[in-house]
Length: 385
Image (cartoon, rainbow, N blue to C red; front, side, top):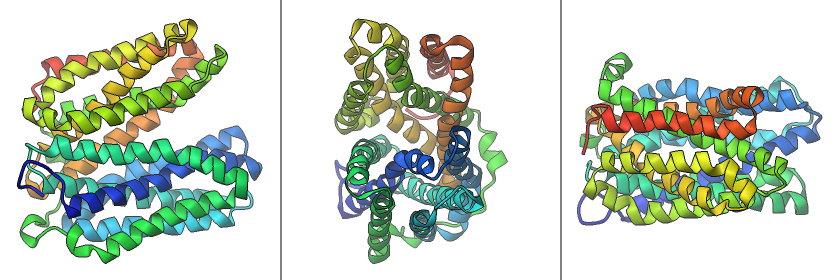
């Protein structure tokens, strides 16, 4: 995959199909609160159950990175998919809110953590710095396509066949990923010379100031994303508007730029795109409340989607610049754990901010936070082109 003008070959196509299937499984569970409500869970309990998945995924990620460093990418990817598959099946047996529900969510989050640690390390090790943004851009298309397609498909399936069918669809996606991984071990496993085993020294990695700046920027970016995904619909409903149009435009713009700009990011410089697209994120966030009142939601949606589509591969590629090849599992585990942490702080901290300042000002204050990301992009000494 490293030679020639393109990243595309059989292995990379296969890997992206696996990414799509695994994130299809995760995206079907965006509708899980509906199932929890049907078994009598209260709103506060639903929030806790949903949060268990993300919390376990983040807490276990460094340990999964160590496991990848010792055992290699393939066995950890396979282990993660097996965990996701078993969890998807056990959801079928949930009849009321018990400890069994929390254990299922924990298993699901642990499996997802293992898959992410192995797969993102595999991409970081496989591609040289001159192609990493392009590679992560294509991976981003796979992830966002699953996130865009599966929730509406899940709603159709639930309406036609009931809630159990949602778990079956999620399970089938995980099963498809499992068979692809098992039947294509040679295409997924790295050559012995490229999969050197090592014990992760996380304090040493975090002692790299450049890497810390990348992680801080990543947390800010993910937090801003999560705030929009979790609170835009609430603000839109208060103003009598629909949020569906915003997300359709944003995800379409993100996917378009992921497909068209990823190669240019590698050619022209990752930090240059970081500095250019952070202002678009700021503008998109700041304009959301006003655009809802004036029915101009297309403008912030296009700005936010553009930033989302470019800043995702840029942060991935900049993170992958750090550490030796043997340390890539640890580097990408810390990076992905930081990214996922933003999707925890988004609903939690932004929920407190919304309670204190109101939804109208939540997006203005989140825009101010994104300006801190721009400040880091402009002034921090980050490694890489």
